Length: 536
Image (tube, rainbow, N blue to C red; front, top):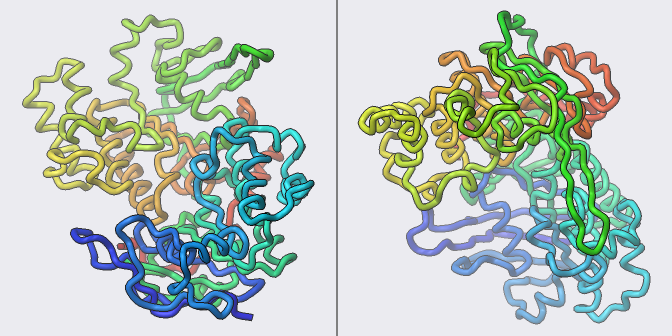
């Protein structure tokens, strides 16, 4: 049975946008008990199509053509009151970022119950039943909790529980697993598939990850610049893509097994010996907490080598990296850079090493000063270390070219760039100091697969050309397989396994490593060889 039929949908953009329409002449259908994945890069129109369906288009956007027929009724003619009656009751939505979608001042029970109260449905024990149905541990405790007290995966499950409260006919899942660890992602995908199968719900699943598509989709629609360029059964699109854009997106996915690389030789550039970091929090009305974020962590990185530090959120990866650059002060152990133990140094003695060790952060928009032009951002570090202004400015232009940006970008602000371009600026800023060690903390986790492929290729090229040594932090094992010579696997603050990437991935010794590898989305699917370089 067809639940939803969209025919010729066009959504206009405000004057001055990069194209006239956000969505243009889009047509697709969704059946009961089916999962339709809409795939494409940022700006392709995926989320706008879903927002048009629910009547939640951002200000300035409007439906100018087409039909949105849900259960035999064209929603373009529905009033706001009618749409409010449909949202939650017949059409449920799970948003990409639950921390911003959930009210931070309301307990979980009240947020899930609100959906039922708005539609004048009895609450009773329904909230408890929903929290149990989405597999949350200790539902009674979680019902009393605020969103900030939950993990990302738990918050996403709460969003799913709220969306399912009134058993809607359609569930819209807008990038619900993008920021999650692979193990949590696997659980959420299995949960959505189980709900769809058990309740006969039609699922409109929005994603940019073809690995997720391979894991969950019945049918696929691929969007590029507001248009659907290809759609069909999941097996056909995944294994025999017809459109060059689909082929390029699939080719951009890191999917090849890690290749054996020659071992690096010589003295370690960085050596960590039994590094530990414990956080202590004080409670006003309750007992304080002690969290051992890093426990007896030891590793080595030799010149020209890339070591991948992999593990789930909360495993201690970023804390360990921040101990290296002294954004966090380690409690114990040795952090040897060359022949110097950095841990006992004073702030003044540490200053020369800030030039030699640089960091690329996960979110370039948050780490770049929005009030300063890119050129000023790039010369700030060299000027602080005594480089003459003329030399620093000349070097900044060379760096922009090195990371494949136009030198004219120096006169623009960070908000004027795409996410991938901002990450290139973050890399250029780190390279401005001519570091010996580059620490990349989840530098591609929030990027589209094609942009991710470009940034990974850029980092590998820079490593070879400049002889960089890298500590590369990621929760995506596909990325680690592509770029890392060796990997160290962290779990709950401890390094549980390390070795060459090819060896660890082919023969994982620790059960946690095996669980991570088993959770990679689309692990049973081998993409066909296609041309690389997706373009929007």
